[in-house]
Image (tube, rainbow, N blue to C red; front, side):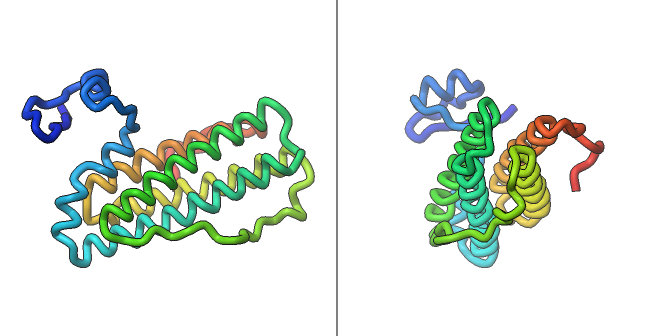
Amino acid sequence: MSFLIFANDPAPVTSRRAFMSKSGLLLSGAAVALLAGQDALAAKGGKAATSDVNILNTALGAEHEAIAAYQLGAESGLLQKPVLDLAVTFQGHHKEHADLLSKTIAKLGGKPVLAKEKYIFPTDTLKTQADVLRFAAMLEKGAVSAYLGAVPLFGNRDLAKAAASILGDEAMHWAILRNALGEVPVPSAFVS
């Protein structure tokens, strides 16, 4: 059983309901994992912490790109309701990921990468709603693969768990986008 202990309160928190009542906050599992134990990691410093910050910054860069891509899709005029609402929801998830990654990088003593001024997207190939969905699905699949590759590289296992949680969200995005395209949502038993 996993639990959290709050400073000045030695009683473990063993349920989400107890956690929310003690903290007054609603944090996702990824948020808790990313922020848990960071003081200890920052104190250890060294190559592992630097490597973890680099991995987090790579993930943050990809999240910034996803936010920009969903903005492009939303502003394209090609997405109809409820697809537009779905795109905005997914963009919101990426904003939450980016915010948490930025805070974690800073807490580890690193400098979070900023979004680029301009991203180069294949706008000339985005002519229909299906084109936009296919482009978004491709980005989400890439995010799944990137997080999958990052998970075993973290020196801090709490960061690895958090990245795996974000990976799960990206995989759900990919599956839903494939479904919206009329494709099999989960094309195989393994993600690569």
